[in-house]
Image 1 (cartoon, protein in one colour):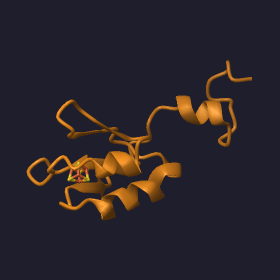
Image 2 (image 1 turned 120 degrees about the horizontal axis):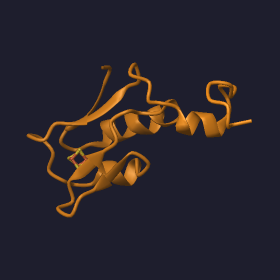
Image 3 (image 1 turned 135 degrees about the vertical axis):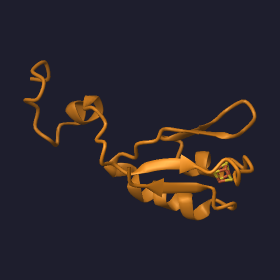
Image 4 (image 1 turned 45 degrees about the vertical axis):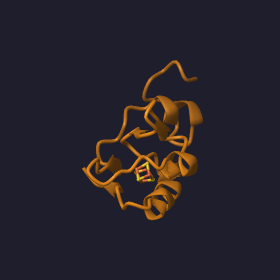
Length: 88
Ligand code: SF4
């Protein structure tokens, strides 16, 4: 049962979505000096990036393992090389 914290198996979808973020996870960051607000990153990775009212990206920093590939694709596609993935 999911009511017992710490007892869910690692593959459990519910436990994965409610687990505290792993501090060792890759982090998505934006270099604001370089970002031009093209918004391509939000199109490629809407799960972790949305655009503010000025069309600049607001990113969820921790990258879940299942989205690492898409996050790398967004980094590569950024026309200003402003989106980066870093390890904490
Ligand atoms: S794709 Fe790059 S330049 Fe465009 S909004 Fe995202 S981080 Fe900024």
